[in-house]
Image (cartoon, rainbow, N blue to C red; front, top):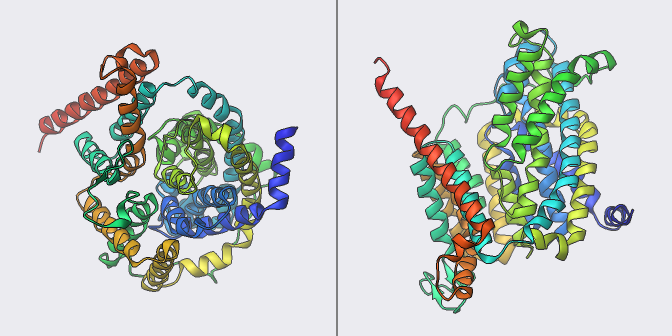
Length: 501
């Protein structure tokens, strides 16, 4: 009851409710814009949270994530183009329903299942995050170092592309993390005489450049993306929420989606895309209408949409409890926490409980308001998505640059954001994953400081990492992930070489 009282106090005495509703609305619009993923939608808001109350800022970012996961289904259903990666599975039956004249019903199923998935994920977040954080209180500096190694190993081994590319980008991130003052001696490193770099490269500029600006660079060079999306706001499409009969029909598929989404969300590196396709396949396997999947059945929408919205909440469990983001979007949220001086992990629950409880309440408001906002915002959203892409890109550029400049009122920050954007564009061009770089940048301080702290405690004896039971367990898991990924890549390469040309 005490926690509930704190949540109610935060929701009624701060702009938290407005942040939750506004975040959902922006997330729906951002998710509906093809090419603007949930992480990019969150990155665009990040600089504007700088002067906000920390709890309100985190609620705004998390609510944007929730809204964007539903928003991605709008173009997936209407124009056969997923707005987010996680909505790719929704295309299979969503667009087929649209072709049958059932687009409004498909959007309604997506919306209802998204709300259901969010609530299930939130319940697990509330129930599991703090107990896991309490377990992490047993960690020593050696164990924290091993945790950072495990987090990077999981992300690298599960990233798109080769393991080598993932390791390279992770090393880039760790290199960026060394810029600034030494955490023990205070000596400046790699600052090149720039006082702006004494505190290191701000995470916020890296994330905005890597995700938002690099995507704008890519879109500027793609003539297809500069064309209109083909959505007409006057085509009569409206959301039709499912009735009791339809809800009974799709409930089993929604449960499958909730199960896979919750499990995958708690696994760093898995993400909504894997959860959506696994849910879709299992829903098809267990459905009485399995042969009809792909022709426009409601179950084919219910399973993936429940899954990707469940992921939006459960992916916060490893982020808050251990400080290990499981996806690009939670990496942005992690950056938001650190921007406001809060270090994710077990101490977060002790030092800033009001932020955690406020986040729970904000996510609850966001999940419920999604049902109303999803209906109300449809027409404006379709109008905005239907505008020419050059106009949209120009508006987003203005939004990004004004936000970056407003942080410190320094032109140097804009230059750093563009430098990160060039790096992100190069990574994308050569098909290198982003997340290992971002995670390496964020975890660099944790890895270095705990590595050196552990060696101070052991008088320079590296055996401390072996003697600590939690440390050796996590380092062993990291080795298993890397070796498994190497074997898998070698098998794939051998199979492709033996395949007939």
